[in-house]
Structure formats: C-alpha cells, structure tokens
Length: 247
Image (tube, rainbow, N blue to C red; front, side, top):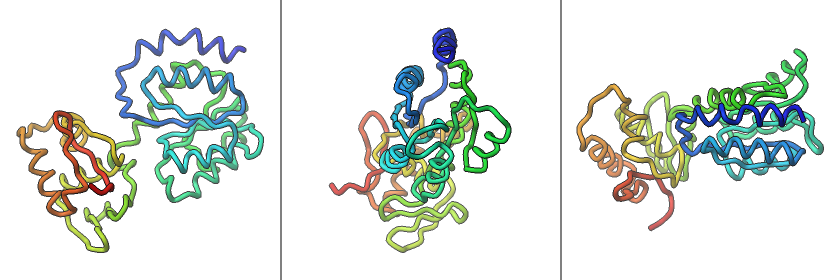
C-alpha cells in the first residue's frame, strides 16, 4: 500500500519532466502482482514508452526473445523462475545482447544487491520508490541505448563489424566511411522503424554540426548502391527505414 501511495503522490512530478525523447523505447515489466504491473505500467506509458508485462521469469524470457525490449524491469521474488535466475537466462541469449536489466525488489540487503549485479543486472532498485525517481533511473539506463549500443550485429543477410566499419552482406565485406556506417547502424537498430530526417541528423551528425539539406540523401544513395536499394526505403515526407522484406 505504501508503494502505491508514494507512486500516486509523485505522479504530478513525473508530468513536469517529460522532455526526454522516448524514441519508441520498449520496456518489459516482470512481476507476479497484477496491481504493481498495472500501476507501474500506467506511469511508464505516460512517459511515451511501450510497456509489455510478464508474470513470471519463464514468460519474461519468452517475451523478451519475441519482442526484443530495450529494458527489463524485473522483480526478484517470483514463482516458476525467480528474478536472479531470469536475469542469468536473459544474459545467456545472444539475441538479447545490449538488453538493459533493472532489478526491482523490496529486498535491499547488500548481499542481495551483489547477487543481482553478479547475475548480470545493470541496476538494482529497492521498493518503495517514488515514480519520479524510478523514471529517472530508467532514463539513465535507456540513454545508453544509442546507435552504437542498440544496433544488432546481424539483421537478415547484413552483418556489421563495428571495429573495422564494415558491412558484411551475404559473406562479402564492404568498407564504409564513418558516417555511412553510423547511418546504416542507426537504420539497422530498429528494422521497419521509420527514422525522421531530424532524428538522423541528430544521431549521426549531432546538433553542433552544420550539414547541407542533401547530405542525408547523398549518404542514403551511396548506401543503397552498396547494400541494395530494396533494403532502405524512403517514407515520403518523413524519413527512411530499413527492411528485409521483399517488394
């Protein structure tokens, strides 16, 4: 009850701090108590984040593999598979490299926190916690998802080598200039997601760099020539997206 009261009391504070770019972040909440899932999900959705829920560790692993969330907020004490075991299982999956995991629990003992970090957690959050503080902790983790950390190594037939700035397409290595590589990495980070021109400028070139209107178009054209025009689609009036779908 105290947990819910603190969350309600601080909801107004959350609403005043919504200048954080959600970037379609996806969060998986894992808890065996429906009330907590409902209330926390409500507050996180208010931030613009997509929220998925699971009731135990086994379900959480299955959902993570299917939906590839950016962050898992994981209760420790659960039936079927507890939070520690779930964290270890999530960390064992190559498909989930880069996933952020935060433990959320009423147990605040040092040994419990150490066990959480040893299991692979990125953060350990004790309940009760004010929503504004919880959101702040989540934002700190989500901000680590940029073009470098969230890009999968492989999407369909395209693999990227970060150290050598290479795209490996059907076994053929293609060397890319830095900006072309960063642009491809951004598009690959969320297949089928449309990235606006403004977002591409911000994440690839940065706010402090002045570039011409046609800069993105030129880099897109060069990438299409190297990896295949069918993979990078123009969404008229919006921006670009990467796809592996035919046609």
